[in-house]
Image (cartoon, rainbow, N blue to C red):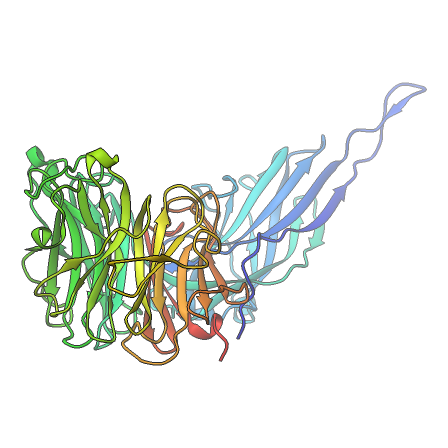
Length: 539
């Protein structure tokens, strides 16, 4: 199936005019009062509907109200759920009156649901006119949902508004296409386990089919290192349908004198030959983050590259392993991993994307690179800098022994794409570099191979995800390429979240038919969704 490319939300207008009778004003002249005019615009939303969230926006009505005969109230909204896979996925529906273009009002209006109509996927909302009063200007009316705990995240919710009734008993029919949204899971949200912020997702599928999600646990604030940050892990053994409780797998201490010894920006890698799961992260002993780290090798001088490993499919994890001395040039100011995920090459080499800051004399110039191991993680090596002013990158093997590095670029709103045939000793710029894949100037993205990512052989499609925008971190989109990244046709692109967010994402192949994505979304700090591969790729 070819999925249509994302587009700006369509607005379908239905105009209602309510005219008041003329009022006499003196023996000669008559003056008519200005009639009330109501323009109803239906704004479809491209947002995930998430288990774990109390309120999930489905559609927005923008009602433009003008005239002297205001306020007028909404009394009834009739909607259809004919695009919904299973009505049993829904625990409740709500109406929110007010708020801005991108944010709901805090108060929701309870909706009386006609049970008989609900079974036929027709819902009637009866509104308290004291709360649903329409004022001069634009009035935002939201229809929202709450999912049942056992909702199937492979399903969809589809809704369309059919009619709107006002307090003067006038009714208008509204005709617009059904808005269909995908379900997902709010894996981590502000306040979960008393944590302020969850950021920087990494995701991988183990040899046993288990999903391993890793991320920053930012205890006290949303800020980067240094700070009180640990590496968290969530694990699913059923393809992301349910997840075990969060586990902290890397914690270097919490001494405030050393900025809480924060560790973060994780990347996860599965050794396809041994089954070992590796997680890499940056330890900041004191002020050794992006801005504070300097030349040297000691924890008091520079950020440290730490690994942890699991040999039992993510159930238990080793103590942190410091590989800084193996991979960092002492003159560099900083060396760190991806973040995101790494790969196993066809010859068994393990590869993480990486980045370093050059010497102070070279203005700490950042460059993306790779770190790799030919002996299943016993020793590690570093490539050279791929391109100037590049940072967070992702790596894939596009043919045996040939690596593609897709890099965040700090100078333009396009991705840098580099290729190496000698494990990062030399690099050449790909024909699409700085031309084809856009980004909102400096944002992490994800890149995986459909066939090779689970350790398979064969011709490979590539998948890419990021905020598909030149400016803001919004319009989270998955793209597919059938020619090793030479083209990314619009018919192979899928918008999954149009809202503003922190914008990082990580992809994995759950199985040969299903994509998994863990991303920083507009509806939760870490959102997980399952996407059928057929929604992006020709069969």
